Image 1 (tube, rainbow, N blue to C red):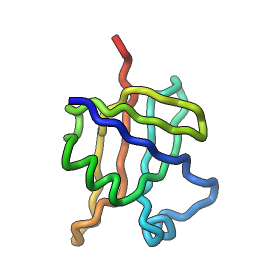
Image 2 (cartoon, rainbow, N blue to C red):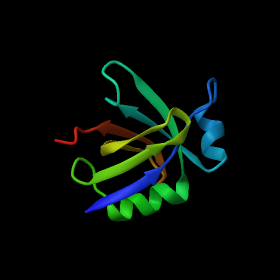
Image 3 (tube, rainbow, N blue to C red):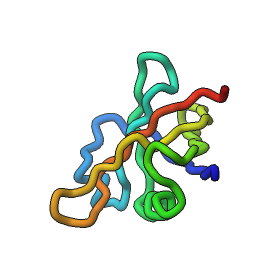
Image 4 (cartoon, rainbow, N blue to C red):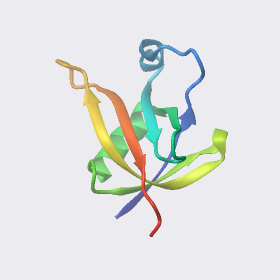
Length: 99
C-alpha cells in the first residue's frame, strides 16, 4: 500500500514548541540528496491520518515538498512521542530509491 503526503519546509529559526502550539509536527527528510537533510512541518491531523494507514519502516510514502520542488518515495524511519502524553513530537523520513 502506498500513501501520499504533502508537507512544508520548516521556516528557518522556528522553534519546535511554537510549531506544536500551532498544530504542526516537526519532521526531517534524510537521503533526498546525498549529504543534505531537510527540516519539515506537517499538520497534526495529517500525521494522525498517516499513522492510521502507514507503519514505520514498512509503508512506502509518496512525499511531496513544494517549497524545494521535491517529490519522492520515503519511509517513516522514526516516530517520537512525548514521554508521558500521547502526543507525537517528531517524525523522521528516509528517502528510498525507485529501483
